[in-house]
Length: 456
Ligand code: F0G
Image 1 (cartoon, helix red, strand yellow):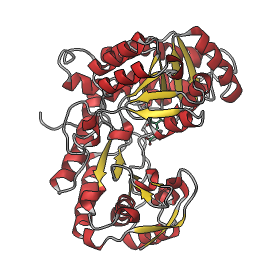
Image 2 (cartoon, helix red, strand yellow):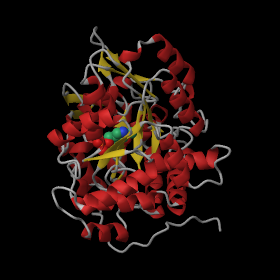
Image 3 (cartoon, protein in one colour):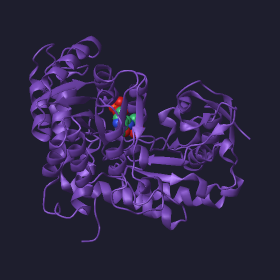
């Protein structure tokens, strides 16, 4: 059969409030043209993030009822620990409340002023947790990863030549670790090949440097390897994921992505000394090491979610639905980062709104228009998020001006996606009328969260 169906039935549902365009135009004005300020119930299709927004399965809700809320040594912890160890093979697992808590603990423990951490591309919270240590987060992505039209299969790879150069020319004591983000969220959700993971691990170890994975979307990365890398077509996603982790000395993880949980995460590592230092910090900031800022029931939801995320029927449907959105946009003349990523589609706003100057935020203007047209909430990843003012007061623009449409796991059906495509088509008809925006309030940092705007 050609048709790929959602491999689940819906037992419990969350109603969507239907709104019309005048209602949404008013809501957007009231939110000062910032989509983060729109109440979620005024959003019809929420593609702001795939993080913490998954539907949990009946088995996960059942596991939640098994949650053991003992302060120390809860049975939930042991179920969680054994699920994570079986998958990753790491000797020690520290639970945390979400990915950035793992990053905070890891980098507080290992990074100091003047250090440099190489990565394919740091996610913003990873970068912030490196920079807050006065260390440098250095992105060494392959060049094709920056070209939206390039269709290479592993555009999330790190540039091995650049990494090798870097490791040769930088004193060992300034490199606390090498990291790879799978999949590469900041670069279109593109995967990293097994060959690249293996080579990165080998290079790092030749220089005596530990190698960590930012493993948020490990299952999607593993499925890309299965589909695209010769030699892996007959391996299970679990086996591929296990092999990915086997090259690493540790990982940070947000269970809000590829564990189907609404909250949670972990740090995995093999080095006992490092883990002992991190555990002390964990107790200070997250909680006792058998719950790490989570309820016992959350740990059970993760343990069960990890069994479900490597299910290949699920992953097949997941990729089909993301691809369906991406290809539908391309068919309607809307350029996206190609090929479609695993968890999201990234629209190239400059190709849709070429007449809006960069300093009037074309990506943000597009995200706002999509909300007005259809109640769809995406997220600008462009000048509002990453633009800066240079010393001369002039704007420095990021390389790409994107709008990310992230797809929550197991939440929306194909007719929801058809609706998004119809709205995109509608938007294209009026794209010449869409106006740019300017700040009425510009926060000093992370400005996309709280900025206020008006239309030019
Ligand atoms: N690393 C990557 C690659 C991520 O995508 C995220 C979160 C984190 C780390 C941090 O995890 O949110 O649990 O603290 N990404 C979300 C997103 C927020 O929308 O892409 P967290």
